[in-house]
Length: 222
Ligand SMILES: NC(=O)c1ccc[n+]([C@@H]2O[C@H](COP(=O)([O-])OP(=O)(O)OC[C@H]3O[C@@H](n4cnc5c(N)ncnc54)[C@H](OP(=O)(O)O)[C@@H]3O)[C@@H](O)[C@H]2O)c1
Image (tube, rainbow, N blue to C red; front, side, top):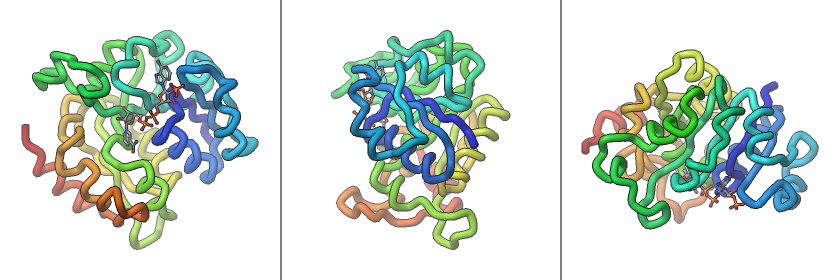
């Protein structure tokens, strides 16, 4: 059993939290408005969920999921994230985040930008390429023939191992997509982003095995 901290508990954060609880983990949620605003989510998730400030959620997590708009990166609590395995679900969208020159030019991936704000964390990019409704509906037990896979990118071997174990526990296989600098291969608009799991209009989604994920990653261009 792992305690998973969440900074950002919206569509994708709360979906990962729900799957984590179903797998027997504890979750500590946070958002920008404060723990009191998460009462409804806690009621849905049950007794293994609690709410806290972002710094407290960061401190509590064995793994911490950062699931916020990219323009919120400067607000993240760097000190309690030092030494932690951090899952970065975030996608850059200038229409929401404003223009960030290094991301527009491709000289930096959004996960490398995140690392600038939390330099002592071990960041692993994951979950950014799947629609939150598909993430919920496509989770399957370990031996299921139609279990889907997710790409992960990161620089720390132990952090990737911890994230792989966590993702396996909540219903997915993992494909290693390389270091954080290769995170662009799974960024918004790439072949592995969204499309393989089916259209957003089909909430059930379509299972995607590891071979299809590898092929989609290999097809990415920039
Ligand atoms: N939606 C998807 O299917 C999906 C899939 C993959 C990846 N993503 C990416 O994952 C990230 C989250 O997406 P989402 O759809 O879950 O967004 P969302 O539903 O809008 O939720 C965003 C969460 O971030 C919190 N937040 C915002 N600023 C914060 C700050 N300064 N400190 C702490 N928490 C803060 C929000 O809290 P408040 O509500 O209190 O402001 C909210 O809980 C985005 O980067 C998105 O591009 C989304």
